[in-house]
Image 1 (tube, rainbow, N blue to C red):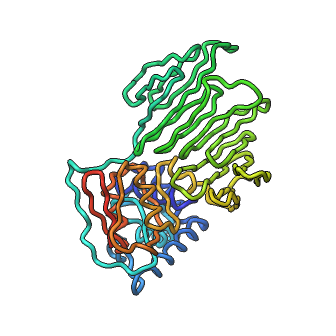
Image 2 (tube, rainbow, N blue to C red):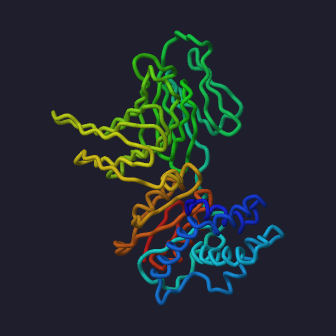
Image 3 (tube, one colour):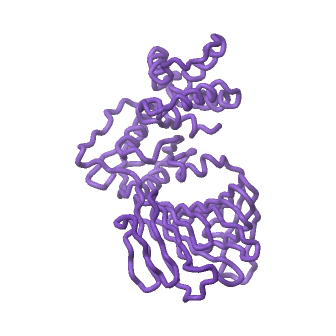
Length: 396
């Protein structure tokens, strides 16, 4: 079980939103051998990161939180098992930041910092379902503004569901009307879902755009992506699916996968969840571009400058964290952390002082307000934040 699931359940418990079934699941996770190893490894890493092995909470504070999190009649009756569970729960609670549901640590000792405070009127909220749809006739539809309405595009009807998903419906099975190109775009702080005309389901991240036809015809189904998206491809062996980005082509063989192709990133990443994909780098030179075939659990990284492709195995739950409501950082430097935060919260970021070498590990809900996230990072003692409207200043 991933760190993200344990963190998610603890966060719900602290907010008193956890169900009886989820509370029992939390017990099981922390008493399972595989979960113990995850918690133990994180616990040891966190202890080594702090001076004299200090942690966020002492044993007495942790015990109080145990009662708050797991208090109730549904505690295990076996005493030995209960002691075993509580032992690992203490470790988990020590790691997870109280009231925010996240853990953050880095490789320097902490200093005492007064957490930054924010006025309610200045609160910056996280992502919500916001997007625009550019139709083939050039008209622009604000999808956040429409509710239970449909849009006509030739012989295609486009509707928005109650959960905020865009769905394309053909007027008839063998439509022959003009095929038009649509572009779905999200701003910073926005996300959206769309079911394409062939049934493919796409989760579009912030600052992203997806261009696609109102009907797929011909030898292949082709879409163009800028930014980040998770795709669950509708199977059609007779018509392969391809995703085009500025620097890469992803040829799909019936699959679910994640692509991150932001313009300000040095690499394009493709992470395969299910099925198989072939990833190739676009190269303006005369030589044939390198291509790699991915298996589930693998991630391809294309260097935009050299066009080199490297493969590595990844934790899929962590890789898909943003789709499931989380940020997960694995030793990311502060600039990379803040790039992600800027996209999801629609803020501008500036830096003061030398912040090189500041790296962070952590999991946190992307639906919390930004002040919770920044205050959590400040607990490391490595950086401090100041906000001015929608501007975040990062300093020592």
